[in-house]
Amino acid sequence: MNATSAIARGPLIIVSGPSGSGKTTLIKRLLAMTMRPLRHSVSATTRAPRPGETDGVEYWFWDRPRFEAAIAAGELLEHAVVHGRDYYGTLKSEVEPYRARGFGVILDIDVQGAEQVRAKIPDHVSVFITAADPEDYARRLRSRGADSPAAIARRMETARAELARAGEYRHQIRNDDLETAAAELAAVIDQAFETGVQ
Image 1 (cartoon, rainbow, N blue to C red):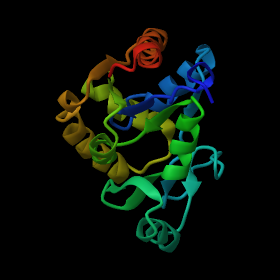
Image 2: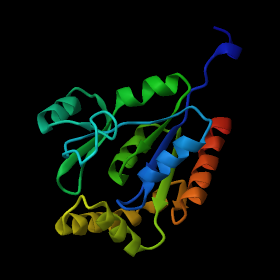
Image 3: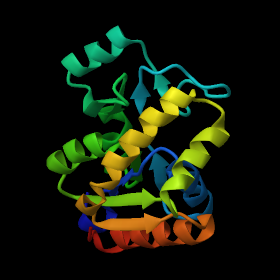
């Protein structure tokens, strides 16, 4: 294969932000508007599916023994226990085969997982998403109708800890207007495709 026919390796885009920051909605908007070859990696988790969620679409919903077997077998790029209860992790099979084919891969992961990935994969782009103000997080969590008041309180505590680590990311985007935030994220990703610069 000559140099002109080689496929350039796609960028790895790490997107983190507290529950309620709107990062999942933002990523969906980005995927709908971009012409870039992008793929949203599907994470694995031991939490139960929420109403309307499908295995292999929002997450791979695994039981704890299966998740722990994947950890032992080295199948995960990163993993963590989130909100003090459930495992979440990124499968290597969701990332490397696609990057090798020129796809940009977006990881929607928490700050613990992002720290692991940044240490393992130097050629990454890191983006932290914030909401307009702290009360927005709680309001968005309540509007989902999926969490108990105790779970929301737990998520808010986690959100405060995550916000304290926003400075570890190369880019920070405030998501108080979806279209503006999506355009900002698209510009970051365009730069990654064109120059490889973080």
